[in-house]
Image (cartoon, rainbow, N blue to C red):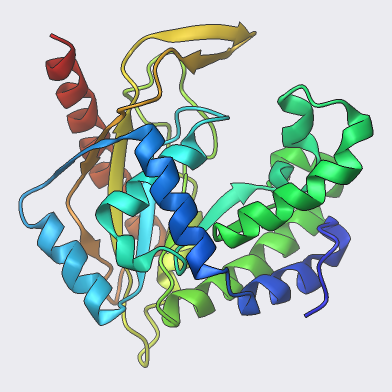
Length: 281
């Protein structure tokens, strides 16, 4: 396969590459285990959700992991640690949506890496995140000069993700798309992408997707880092709560699915913060 350029103008080639790309599972599983050892999340489950998750994994049924979004720099590592905890047999098959800053140098710049090192470091980062199962998303708010192109790119990506779901690859994403640093325990409205994605599994010849809400808490202490932005003071031993798992049904609209996911994710997030608070007492 030809390596993609990750320029938005070449979105078809980029996503065709990710449709067929197979991460190195030995590498991915070793990396996930290491991240889990470092992050050490505390995981609790809604009654029956742990068994439901195991059953879905054994059946290779379509799964969408919906997580709340708390931090620009830490959520990807926390997600890897959570995946290793709740579905280790799926590591290497899970695909995680991430902003395309992981691929175009924006993340390196955010981390304070000098631009003169990007040419060497970016290919290494791209190879690493690809083998972790990451797929880039070109968010319209980050491509205002190419909004129409970004929308076409996202449509094509959704079709590709639908194919991956059908093949048994769980899709994990932060469907809020941004953060609520003022009240991190309260999720922002979910983007309709989760509804569009799940709707693709409701064709007569397909298995409907199950939405797995994963609430995460780093606690309530955040440190301001810029205007309107902050970072959690503690990221290790995040409290995680796997909420009520719901399978989408025929007749549900995109809005119905999005609202169902939002309610279940908020309930899981609320419970994660409650359990973190109990630990802190």
